[in-house]
Image (cartoon, rainbow, N blue to C red; front, top):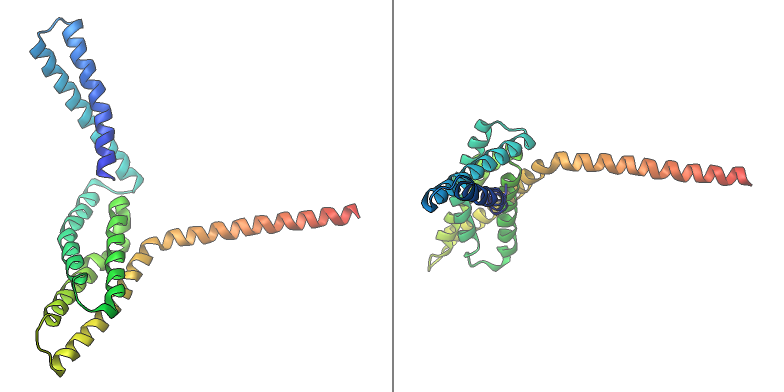
Length: 217
C-alpha cells in the first residue's frame, strides 16, 4: 500500500467531510464559529478514520490476509529496514571494482524483494528464507568483508579470507535471486498458461483460415 496514495485518498474523504460538517453546524444549526470549527475537525477526523479502516480492509481482502498476518509481515518489514540500510551502505562502499556490479546487483535484488513485499504482503511467505536467513547472512558477510578489506596491510591469510568471502557473497546473491524468483513463480506460471492458450487460439484461427481457403478452391 503506497503511503502517499493512501494518505491522499484519506484526505480526499476528510476535507469535504470537514467542510460539510462545519458549514452545516455554522449555518444550519447556527452554532458559534468555535463550535463549528470543532465540528468541522471532528467530521474530518471521522471521515479520515473511516476511509483508513475501509482501505485497510480492502487491502487485506485483496491480499487474502488476516489483520494478524498483516501485522506480523509489517513487523518483519520494519526489522528488515535497518538491515537493508546496512547492507546497501556496506556493499556500495567496498573498494573492489571487479565485484562492484555483483554487489550492486545483490542490493538491487534485495530491494526488489522488500518493495514487492510492501506492495503485495502475501508474497512474504514465498520469501521467508530471505527475511529470516539470507538477508542476515548478507549483512554479516558484507560487513566482515568491508572490515577486512579496509586493513592497511595484507598477508596471504587475509587475501584468502577476502577471496572466500567474495565467493560466499556471490553464492548468496544467487540464493537471493532465487528468493525473488520464488515470489513471482506463480505469475510466471500464469503467464505461460496464457501464452499457451493464446498460441492455441492463433493456431486454431490459422487452421480455420487454411481450411476455408481449401474449400474456396
